[in-house]
Length: 399
Ligand SMILES: [Zn+2]
Image 1 (cartoon, helix red, strand yellow):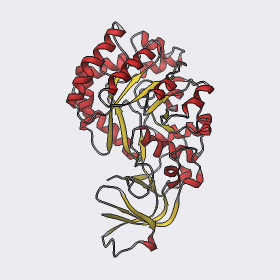
Image 2 (tube, rainbow, N blue to C red):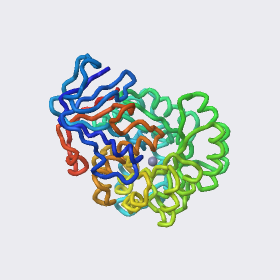
Image 3 (cartoon, helix red, strand yellow):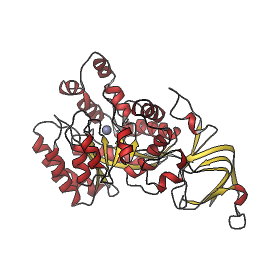
Image 4 (tube, rainbow, N blue to C red):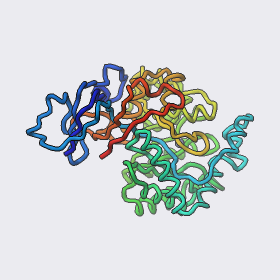
């Protein structure tokens, strides 16, 4: 057992959990003043309440005094491509000069360049640079982090990326095999190889892998690939998410939700009638506005999504091309300014809903039996997702 006292304000986010992340508002912050927190051996909340009500007979343990800091559930970063070699700095200049994402991709830049650069790196080098990036997220209060492979295009490099992900330390990591990201040669031959040859080998090697992803976009993969993919992965009992409707409107988000996707990513070009239909499913809408910022694209319709009753989460989409940032604060700020999300909606999106996007249902609120990972800070909630380049000092307690 670990006991924390001296907490000025504990924001439990109890209401977010009660509402399952649907239409959260400020009344859901679940504030307890002058609080104490008891964490059990499993790293779960055993008890939380006013410090004066802490029963020291039941919990006769040494306490950690937080000296009047405030606490809230730590963040979940639910969409990153963190294991990569090289950078795409030149490409950013090309984008400024008017080249599109697809034009850059077709001229050998884009994902293909990162694939080349990632192949070049040794596994030790990749572990070193990736571990630094993980530590950066931790400094920003992230305790659950999703990391995708996908810069391999061949079995060997995909496995190398997954090995790197497995060796990263310091917080909880959900690995995702991004099976279909981009390809060389004939698309159908490539899809066939990935699904029937690579996937079974990868699952044999990485027993903890439970989640796969694919990138559906014109010039990459299409809805028939999605169908083939889902039929295949269901035979292995895997969960999946889909990069959907990021650059154009293909109806992918809705199709993926119908097929049982845990989350759909980006969903910028959704039609209004699709939004209503999407609210029938549990699929989380994982929105990535930093990518929209870098690509100078429209932002997703978060306001409409939330009002209609969809669960919305936020993530950085950290990658060297379309979203070279690990700044959660910037993502939340874009969500507030450009997507009209309230502060409560942003906090819910980056804690409870982001965890649920990854299939983790006991995280994102400091309530009994939920994961107790929390952020301690001298700041108020209003200091987050407000100032460009804010350097908010905080400490992550993860168990
Ligand atoms: Zn992505």
